[in-house]
Every structure is written in structure tokens, then in C-alpha cells.
Image 1 (cartoon, helix red, strand yellow):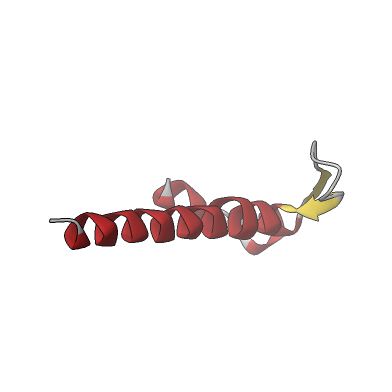
Image 2 (cartoon, helix red, strand yellow; image 1 turned 90 degrees about the vertical axis):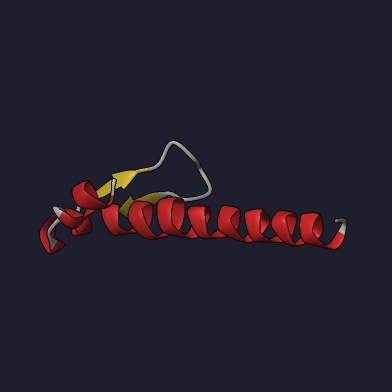
Length: 59
């Protein structure tokens, strides 16, 4: 996935489209990459780290 994301140039990241989610409205592709992919994955990473730390405590 990272390889494909690196192929996106600045003009592509500026292309706007209306979201299926009414909370987001019309957003550029950069929003999809940053918010819906990068930030979402970062949140899951935090969840994974918390769960792993709980496993270490309970050993």
C-alpha cells in the first residue's frame, strides 16, 4: 500500500470528490490518505499497543 500511495502526486492529492459519509462533505484525496488511512491506522496501532501492554501486566 505504501508503494501505491507514494505514486500519488500533488495534483492527484488535490482532486476533490463528495464523500459517501455526509459528515465529510467534499474533500480532496489528501484527506482520504491522511484522515481515513493514516490517522485510522495510527488509532489501531494505539489500541494494539494498549492491548499488548495489558498482556504484559497480566503475565
